[in-house]
Image (cartoon, rainbow, N blue to C red; front, side, top):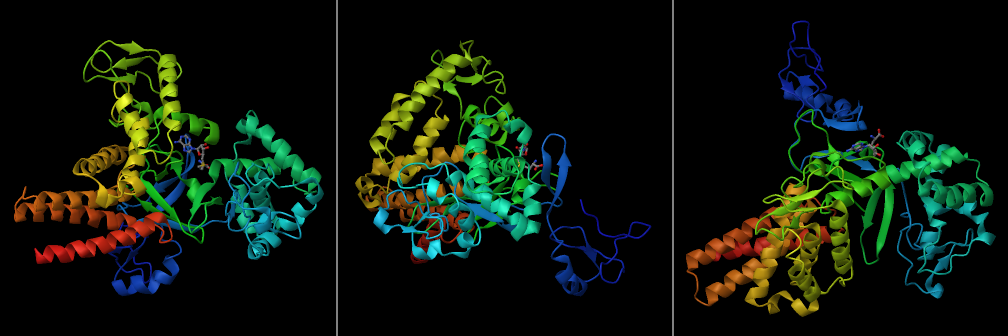
Length: 536
Ligand SMILES: C[S@@+](CC[C@H](N)C(=O)[O-])C[C@H]1O[C@@H](n2cnc3c(N)ncnc32)[C@H](O)[C@@H]1O
């Protein structure tokens, strides 16, 4: 923890006049003042140093971020602009400037850069300084060897773009390059992986041989590694389907935890805002989640092992029940309430799975086979197929725990489809369907509150999804004469408080995102409900 300057007898001293100081900076607690006036006067100097975190080194995690004061839920921990962005690895051809997918764009509607012949969504993007001043000239040297003509097929040249852009910072912005080159690349470990060979052929050899870059093999591999280990996915909004990767050197210092304590939003200017999603105590680590929190332990640990090259031993991974979320549990066929759980969850290949209530056991191999089969069925369901999701939940109920991640995934889809799909428009839903939507949201939130607790996107969205069916149900019940005006008002008050929490959470999202739009709709509905309550 940063400590304010103090005298020999331990009295805190004012950072301006060195008089006895009693007011600590509310931001970092690491500096003190004798009066509010001196604090205000000093802010122009202190604001660049006032941080609620510090980056420290830890044997197990490497560099990591630790809170240097108590941080409240919703409080901003830091903001940071991406030092570089680029297409995602493995993406289909996309515009190199705005990242619009070109998948369904006809050749005649594309704009080819006259320099490098890369396809862009429009002339303006091809002429952007980001492209012209960075990779265009280098890519143009390989122009006669590269044809990107099938927009529905992955082209390996897209693997080169972001590493090349980062490497070019070496001459254009040496300070940013220095920060980039300090990121973990795990070259020694990556050398043993298949990805190393993929990069060797498609990035290292391509850039050195075809494009004639002067970077060494090691430098190029380090850039590829730093990007694999550290880059963040950026969701971009608007009318086109856009996704990219961003390099955030400070955010890269957050270690992973399968129950993270932060929430981040990246806006259209590639600025990331990281907030505490729950209270973080001074001295605690500040975590991000590198995986999807609603996946089960075997999937999360495998993603982390393969993409980030470490074994996760967090509390959730080490707990057979995943902190009582039961996201990986099976149902016991021998007893009514037993959950079949891995006895040693960190040894996923060898651990026996045992019922929590009786001696029933399965081997890891059998569990794996069962889950893979059910997963295949789940993945075959079309994204809008309400009936198939419902059938899936019924059919596998005897095999999987009600909270299993495949069921939770089905509920996540259903929570959105009821009320939105054209065959299930909200006003046309029956009472049973409205109840179903609410209960799906409640089940989803019960699990999400354990593995993604606090002020998180999933909580905001699910609360918003719940409010309208609850209101419609209250109305129907009242109009049918099944509740008194007082009971009706109480039901509407409950909806108001759900919506009020949803607006608070969704107001933290980027205004241009779908959740941002949902937040604005939530504010409008909240105003209407408040006005309505006043007339009751
Ligand atoms: C994005 S970097 C985080 C910063 C990194 N520790 C450093 O010193 O540059 C990700 C890497 O940090 C380490 N790491 C992050 N979370 C971890 C965890 N929960 N357990 C072990 N290692 C972790 C792994 O080496 C991982 O590949």
